[in-house]
Amino acid sequence: MNKFIAGIYIRLSKEDEIKNDNSSYSESVENQKELLLNYVKENNFVLYDTYIDDGYSGTNFNRPSFNRLISDIENNKVNVVIVKDLSRLGRDYILTGYYLEMWFPKKNIRFISILDNIDTFSNNNINFDFAPFKTLINDMYSRDNSKKIKTALRTKQLQGKWVGGCTPFGYIQDEKDKNHLVINNEEADIVKKIYSLFLRGYSINKISDYLYKEKILPPNIQRDINRKNNNFHWSSTTIKTILTNRLYTGDMIQNRRSRINYKVRTLKKNNKEDWIVVLNTHKAIIDKDDFDDVQRIISTNSNIKSNKKNDYLLSGFLYCGECKNRIVIQKSGEYFYTMCNNYRKNSKLKVCTPHSNNYFKLEKTIIDNLKKIISTLDIEKVVDRFDEKVNQKNSLEDINSLKSNLDSIYLDYINKKIKEDMYLRISERLTKKIEQLENKKVEKYNTREYVESYLNNISKDVLIRLIKKIEIHKDKSIDIYFNFIAQK
Image 1 (cartoon, rainbow, N blue to C red):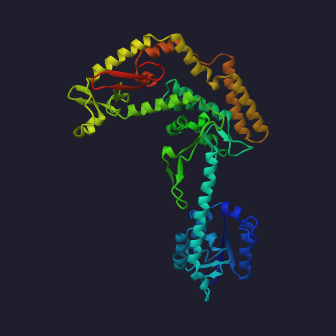
Image 2 (image 1 turned 45 degrees about the vertical axis):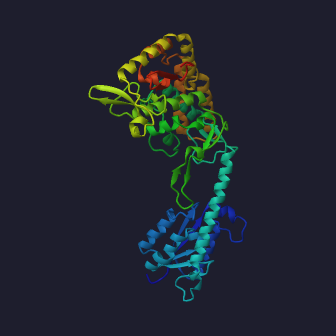
Image 3 (image 1 turned 60 degrees about the vertical axis):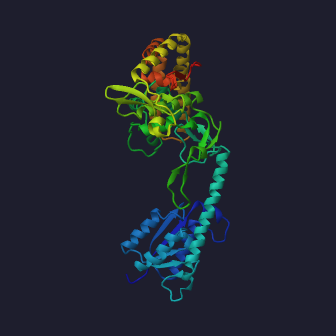
């Protein structure tokens, strides 16, 4: 190309917009554009296109319009790049220097920064010699600004204010205070249902199947106002995330992840002791006792699943009574026996003793003891507690709650907060459930029969709900620690 064909590049981050709100040279897109267009006109350049990245940090070079500009340069459509100042190109001194000193010269691109008085095709280019210092200062500004933002966010987190992006499924931001969470009734009912099913013994995969059959959309699709399809499949990861999110109990849990630094946007997991926890900051969806029960079941299931070759009934429950490490189940020929894992790994150090027992004799002893204890239980109290935990707390099966939700989405519809197709879909589902309940078509089960069958058949599922751990001592005595029975 013999003539100069310009691409004017404009970038504005939220921090720049706030910082320069009252300055004589505001960084606003409009003011940058006016300045650059006047420069193009005064210097008789041909304008090819305007490239605008609004809301992008200068430390991030993966910007859509900047990438489009680079592509147009590669395709010989642009040979002049004009910016207001160097900070608009970028605030990362390494990458900014790479484009200024290597990539643009290699492509024979004329680079102009108006306020810095830099023109790489000018004979008097002394200002370009100082460009590395300016880019370093811009980088230092970003570092300092990042520290200020982190401090401000941490202050809000310590106050129990929500500072995240997308709210957890079941909550929305309060219209009056964006740092406060309020319940989304329709989503919250689904969260409650997931917890209810899990506490009734449903596996995560079985819960996924249930939600699919009920045609309940997963969070990512339900919240996508532009969705083009209705995929009712819930991933196990999504369900487990809901089942392990303590925020549903009304406690604010933040700072679980953080960026590596102000330039690298990749998130890393923080240690649990670095989490910021503030109690009772918003209305709970899940009872704290129910949440604790779910975490215990998930933890026990994880321990059991660690034994991939064999599925022993007591695997995951056994602990050493002396060193408190796990007791593992091993096989030698046809003989199955227990062994302290600490001793197994460090037998030469004599940190513990083997704690060897015939596994199947041990299992029979423990199961016999459990059956004796269960036989002393007041079944009526157990049945009452089961009804309270499962039936009375199941808000999806509460007519008044469903009617309230129906009224709520109607108000959202007439106030144009949701689209008509979404309103019709939700209202149809809620109306159907209300009719089922009013006509007593909802499936009922015999609670007593269920509980008696549940307790009389000692399965791994029963153990998970009854037992916290079993300690085996070197003298072969056994201590059983229960979750709900104040007995040892």
